[in-house]
Length: 159
Picture 1 (tube, rainbow, N blue to C red):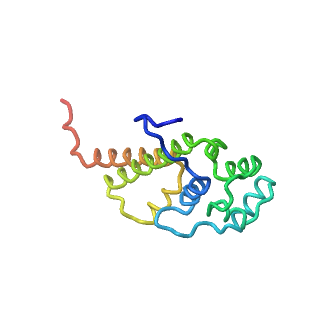
Picture 2: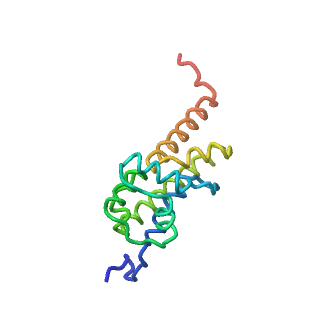
Picture 3: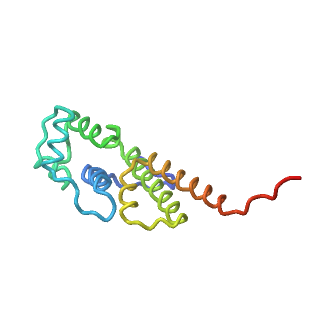
């Protein structure tokens, strides 16, 4: 039996939980307007050529269907820009979820330190990938440092 670092076993993540995480990321924070199943199915079909229905995606998300085909997993992974192993390996899924959470917290901290309070900006940035969030956090820190440097009095001229 596989266990986590402390030796206790962790419960498996369901396909529904993994899909829900990706759908929440796509919707953004504080928004309940996840894409419609029908619209998402059409986008996945157009992108992958794989047949999807809104009802099938709904069933996957609700946990009523739990064993999608490899073709469907490939199409979902391309659509959500994650590896197929996100859906097949709980350790990979947990790393993706944890990485997203860490990046979100880093971005939130940078924005708070810089005094960014605009909700619309936070929402737009939350849709970024973990790498994008880290880059945005770095940019915010750099801009803040530049502005703080501009507020310092100029150094006295050298004789």
